[in-house]
Image 1 (tube, helix red, strand yellow):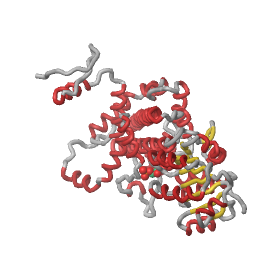
Image 2 (cartoon, rainbow, N blue to C red):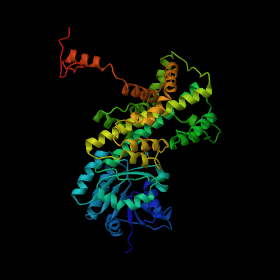
Image 3 (tube, helix red, strand yellow):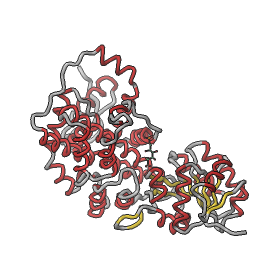
Image 4 (tube, rainbow, N blue to C red):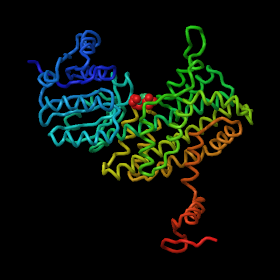
Length: 468
Ligand code: 6PG
C-alpha cells in the first residue's frame, strides 16, 4: 500500500487548506473527517489531481501513513478535539506525532499533552494564525510540546509557514501549552489592535469629518509607514467596498462585535497572574458593550448628550495626531501582551523566546506588522527586558508623540467619543512611569476598615494603625 507523509483530521476550510499547503510543499496527505461527505467533496474538489487520498476509518488513516506517523488535527476546539484524540490513540503507535492546530485553551493542551505522553505519543499543541488564506499560502504557527515532536514536524512546518526575510514564521516555543498560550496572547493583541483601529476610525469620522473615501486614503497612507500591518491594510480596503445598491458596506454593518472567546481567556489569564492588560481588557469590554445594542439604543434616547462632537479645526493636523495616538496606544498594548508572556513563561517554566515570537508574527498572522521588527530588535538588545516601554527605541518613539496622544484622548473625552483602549493605554503608560501613585490611600483604607496592614516608606515591616 502506498504510504503518505501526513494526515489531516478535519476537512473544514482551515484543515483542507492546510492539507493543500502541505501537499504543494511535497508532503502527500491522507484527509479524514467524521463527516464522510467532506472527504468526498475535498477529493473531488480542491484535492483533485493532488497527492492526497481519503480514509474511511480511523484504522485506515493509521495504515496509510509512513512511520513514525504525523497526524494534524483541525477540528473545533473543546470536546471534538478530545473525541478525535480518543480515536487516534486507539490506532496510533508509540512515537507517532499528533499536532492539534485549533484555537484550544492552553490548560486543555497541557492536560492532553500529559495524557498522551504517558501513552508514548508526541503531542504538539499548535496555534495557527492567518485565516483561510494563511492556511493555504503560509500561516504563522505557534507550536508547543515535546521538543522531539517539534523536530519531527519541523521540516514540514518550516516549508508551509509564511516566510519573512529572516526565516519561516514558525519556531519551537516550549513544552506543554506554550504554543497555544502564545496563540491566545496573539489573539488578545489582535483584539487590542482591532479596537484601537476602530477608535481611530471613530475619531477621524466624528471629529475629523472624514468620508469613507478619505478614510480609505488615510489608512492606505498609514500602511506605508510605521503602522504598516495587515489590519491597517484591510481597514483601508473595507472603506472602499460598496454594496449592490452603491452604498458603502461598512455603513450598513450592525455595530455589534462578536467573539469566540480567546480574548476573554487572555484577560482571565492575565488577571490570574496579576498582570495588567488594560488595553486588551478594554477591547473585550468594548465588544461586550457593542453587543448590548438594545440597551444602548434605549439609553441613547433616555440619557441626553451633555456634549456634542467638536469638529477638529485643522483636519490634516487631526489626522496626524490620531496616527501618533494609535501608534503609542498600540505600543502599550503590545507591552502588556509581552509582559503577560514573560510572567507566564516564568510561572510555567516555558522559557518563551520573546524575540522569536515577534519574528514569527511578522508574517502570515492577523497581527503581522512592520512594528514587530522593532519588538524583535528590542529583545535582541535585551532578552530580559521587563517591559517594552523601557526599550530605548520605544521610549523615543513615544516621547515624540506624547502631546499628540494626550490631545487626542482629551478631545475624545470633551466630545463624548468613547476611547476605552486608547485611554486605557494612556493610563497604563502614565501609571507605569509614575513614581508615587495614590495606592498609599488605598492601603490606608484597607487597614482602617479591615486591619489589612500596610508597609511604610520609612521603616521595614508590616504595620497597623488604630485609626481615629
Ligand atoms: C487568527 C485569528 C483566528 C480567530 C479569529 C476570530 O489568528 O487567525 O485569531 O484564530 O479565530 O480572528 O476570533 P474572534 O471571533 O474571537 O474575533
